[in-house]
Image (cartoon, rainbow, N blue to C red; front, side):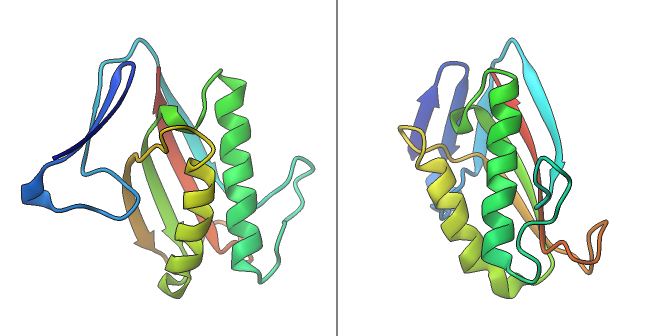
Length: 138
């Protein structure tokens, strides 16, 4: 059973549930603070869309936004315990995973929160290809 720990956060992958690629089956939190981060899209600080019709560019911007949100509350990617990922097209799954892996490689050991990934017909704007909401804990 894989078991990755940071203070107050324990990630587990019991053999009965298999070894997932890049996320944890179970995340146990014993935290003093829980942070909920609204769905992040590919808007920059000025509200401009980054990566029109370019999934890879949008995914990178979404993870930059997620990093900025975490930094605003004194956290890093290692504090993430749950992601909900919304993709407009599941054909972009491998590109999403590449961006996700780069993001989580910014902390050591790389974090692996619990993840739910959903394909949706649209997000709140017609040009958005990905959205991610998150929960972090300290």
